[in-house]
Length: 245
Image 1 (tube, rainbow, N blue to C red):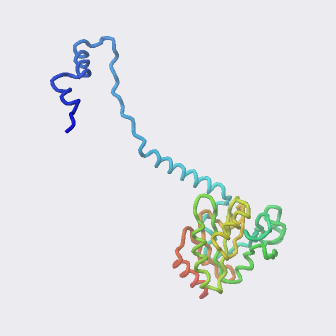
Image 2: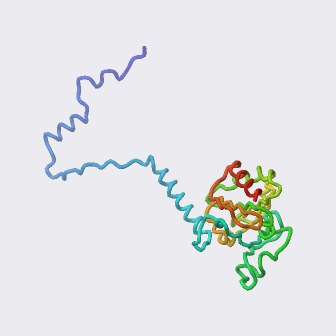
Image 3: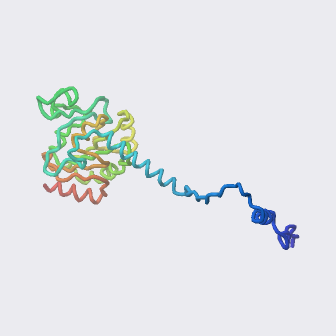
């Protein structure tokens, strides 16, 4: 067994600290001010959690302030209402520009659009006026603040079971149309994906969370607007009900 060179050094003698403590007791310094009790500082073991919570709060604030809305509701178009008119460039097309949200002649302008949205027709735009001729499932997603693309994946996987229903996506982003087109190709989405960057459509539909799914019967009358993810089974159940109407 190797020799312990430090064995016994502490036996039978006082340490230097013990001697100094004894001298302090015997000869206290009269002019030394009394020492305040040291307050133990709180550790930062949970500081990272606080930081994450703060970042999440800032993210929600930025998301909600970045989407213009009139305060009339943030859960989508309400049951019984007709989905509002709009036309927007397809992410996979070549047209650029903002969405047209003009509802009728006399209300059109530079901001809403020069002509009523329903009058616009092109293979490179999505027009909700055409889409609502059948039952319609409209999924709104953003690319900031949440990962909403998986909801579109779920819709894509089950939509082939309902050939009589139209499915479409409104993609709200400040990215270029080509960036969204790359996402569409990469994730193999086959439904129309409208590219919007000015917030006009999400404001028109009262969308304030991602994903938001609007279900509308033939003719465009809304049966339900759902804020948050929906499972494939939940989608099937709702779309099956649409198809029966």
